[in-house]
Length: 327
Image (cartoon, rainbow, N blue to C red; front, side, top):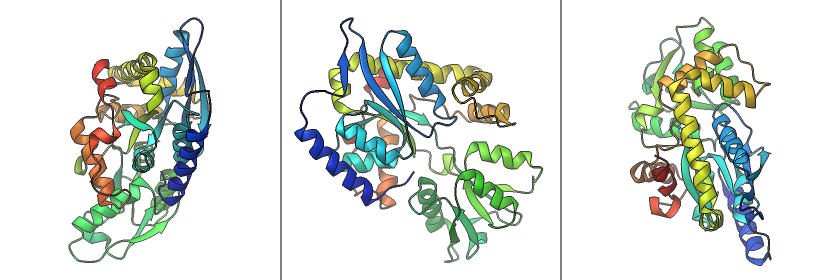
């Protein structure tokens, strides 16, 4: 979930390429009326499996959909801007940066709610307890880092900020917390469950960003605007399928476990049933959760964090008609 000037350069190059390209298009219509197009996913995990299942729903309807796996959301933005990919999904901030650079991209649905929370070792219960103490982050450009620093600026009344240490992914930071190398860190649901299962129940939640930042949606689904305009029917089919897959997960957490087993067979965490139940009980899977208000709240957060310039409006970045039609 990195952001920065590198993405802006990629989008500028992609925009020039798109302007000078001939023929092709983001999707093609087959003789039988079905569509052929590409969906890009970034390092698939538990949050991605409903998207992969929705793609399979389209394939069963006759559409020819290719899945491309990428290492970074910036690569997806470049491909979306150029028309190589029709749809992608992951971090929201790169999409906002791309749209700010006039890339032909719109946010159309939610991937997962805000699942991030800060956990700390014994004695850490407020931001002031973290003044000058080691606080693990993934990177300076990560969304969780932006949330943590926004919280610290507002809540550390004593004037001392945490000492931010770049360590690695959520699972690596959870291990660092267990090992006493850091005093607190933002964690995702799966790593919170692993922390709880370690028997170290003394670690506690310091702040739940899902509650303190209810209008922030850090992971969303976005699409090339030409695809949305020229192939609206199949775009709607995809979003409707995704909404239904999320509804099935919320009806039975085991359904999510089964999807992970099907689409990520190499992933076999011992606590998958607990992880799925936590996602469901927290209501995190809701593709149709986006509203004009919380899209604007998401924009305002990233503007406050210095990721994008102030002034962007929800109507500039999102087309919510697809999730509205799917409900």
